[in-house]
Amino acid sequence: MKTLVRSALVTLCLALLQSQSYAYSVLPMVADLKPTGAESSRLFTIENNSNEKISLHVSATTRTISVDGKENRLPTQDFNISPNQLDLNAGEKKSVRITYVGKKDITVQAAYRIAFDQPTADLEKVEKSKSKDKVNFIFNYVTAVYVSPEKVSPKVQVVSVEKVSGDKVRALFENSGSAYKLLSHYRILISNGQQEALISEDDSKLVDGVNLLPQSQRQVLFRIPASIKKAEKYEIRLKPSL
Amino acid sequence: MKYFFALCILILAHSSAAKTTKRAVAMSAHEKIEPRLMSRVNYADSSLVSILNNNPDGFGLYRSDTKELKWVKDSQFMLSTQNLKENVVVQLLAP
Image 1 (tube, each protein chain N blue to C red):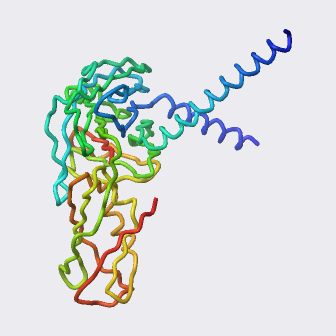
Image 2 (cartoon, rainbow over the protein chains, first blue to last red):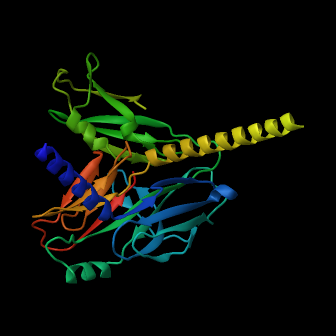
């Protein structure tokens, strides 16, 4: 009985320790805006659950992704951010209004990043106060914001499959549609013309987080599953999984 | 007259309850797609940062020390500060 009470106390203490040492959160991480009207604006909520005051800087960038997956971001004036600097005391919650003020007559969804950054000067403060039980990380949230005109949709297809070596193929995917699509929302099947198999579990991790922005291409290298015979030509098929 | 007022109260109560239910559903759907950094936990001999994720698509985690972008789909991901040679800036990226 004593052991049971002791374990219950330890669990309670651990639970209390966790609840007292929260960091901060940003919501939403993904937002969809319209080019005009009431839906061209959105509130982002930042909650400081830590025991210390935090400062944040909010900024907007464009977002493009090259065929090899490199994300490029450039500062943009397409958003009004109010406020773009904020301090949050321990336990405080604040909102930031993001309003799209860019081109109104877009026909394809535009992708942006809105970043919530802690100044790196905060690291120095952390370093100075560093003790055995202090962490020395600072966190920046990089959210995804899409500005979508009416009736946009993705159109993803496999443009080409090229045999690279004995056991690998390079696939080129294209989204010729007007809205983004995550490649992980598909099951990817490789075929040698006679047999077909899903890509391996390891390779399925390669497509995690692969975002096919509208009007973009992306190449990915896959291993040919061991369950299908070697061939000169392969095909790749996408099956929606969500 | 008494019944009329009772009916009005019933209609108002129903409409208010419907609104509340709708809001609750919207909030839970809203929560589903958004990864949140939830907690920071310290242990006796090492410091750990716990990132709780409720986004089925996961999130990107970039560390300034390793310069690596890792895709995280686990519901809980731990970062250890043990053996760190420098301070680390962590970026949490939406897909």
